[in-house]
Amino acid sequence: MARRRPNFYEHLRMPSTPTYSARFTYTFYLGAISIALFFILGLTGILEMFLYVPTPEQANNSVKLIAFAAPYGWLIRNMHYWAGQAMVVTVTLHMIRVLLSGGYKKRRSNWLIGMSLLLMTLMIDFTGFVLRWDDRASWALLVGTNLIREISPERTPDPRIAQGEDIFYNGTDVAPACALCHTLDGTTLVGPTLQGIRETASKRVRRQSARDYIRTSIISPNSYKPPGFENGSMYPDYGRVLTDEQIDALIAFLMTQ
Ligand code: HEC
Image 1 (tube, rainbow, N blue to C red):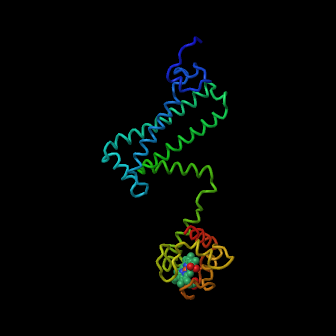
Image 2: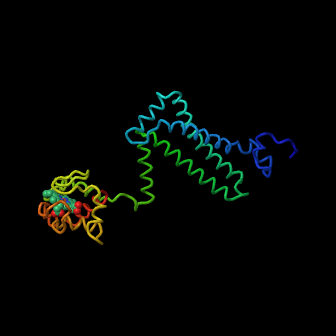
Image 3: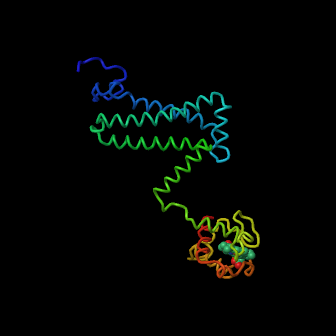
């Protein structure tokens, strides 16, 4: 290749990088474009942060505030959105380019770095989308969480929790509902509130687990006397009218409180 003065862009490259491999027709500047988009995203993101409210009630409203009320908010939000979409495209194309041109062969760790950057870009793009907190975002979130559940089924919430919640609030045909006497919000009815029972139960009796304490409290309520309460007023027959499975479900549910 004929020697010529390197142009400005080529100066940005390390001197060890051969000029031909920094040419536009070779790299399409995909890396540089991705970096530029990254900076646009950072800048517009910081600006949006001033108005964004990250709570379930306010998130969507604050996005609307940014888009419709804030000066140039629409511009900033659109730039953020499209830079985000474009970055996914350019980073992916960049990966493909590196793969096809064998660019990773010189320094193999580059490939790993590139792969993690691609993954991170995809994940950040997803979380950014969810931040909008509108209908489409919540469906996306549902799909995302289901995916994670598929990958790690052991993290799927225990189905007994829902069953336990149902018994707690509605009882069964033969057992009165716990909610007649217990709340989960800190107020006292006939019995002590079960707000934070997972924590309380673990401390009530020395060296007894929270699960065991709750189980015994249900099956034979007079075994313990929570401070400020007298025995005798909790329905005494749960051990008889509830199946073991139903009691396990109640414990699973109360352990989430
Ligand atoms: C008729 C009222 C009543 C009903 C119904 C009732 N409880 Fe109770 N519960 C009490 C009272 C009163 C106490 C405190 C005195 C005692 O332990 O005997 C208590 C205590 C407890 C405790 C111990 C709380 C602590 O802070 O140590 C647990 C756990 C509990 N109940 C769970 C349940 C569950 C689960 C159900 C439903 C299956 C239920 N209770 C239904 C009245 C009730």
